[in-house]
Length: 75
Image (cartoon, rainbow, N blue to C red; front, side, top):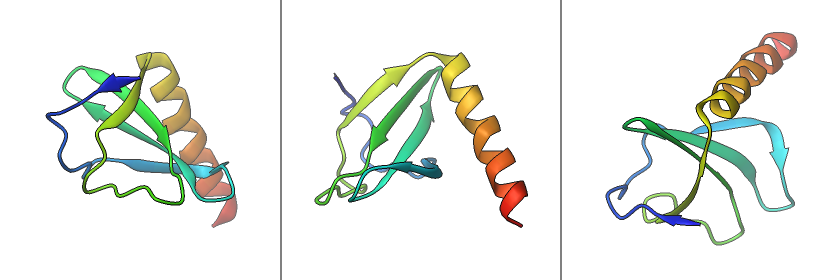
């Protein structure tokens, strides 16, 4: 797990489909040239979240594409 102390607010986070757990969804975020994800928990406060896991750009891009396809099929 990577500490991202410079990310006080995750304004650019994006929820991905219905991927998640009982309490919440998978969220991804781009910060600078790096990409991150987190699965929401029952006590997640996104205005104060400091722990996101870094992921490869290819995974981020794939999740963004999946999200667009999932959204298009539900409209």
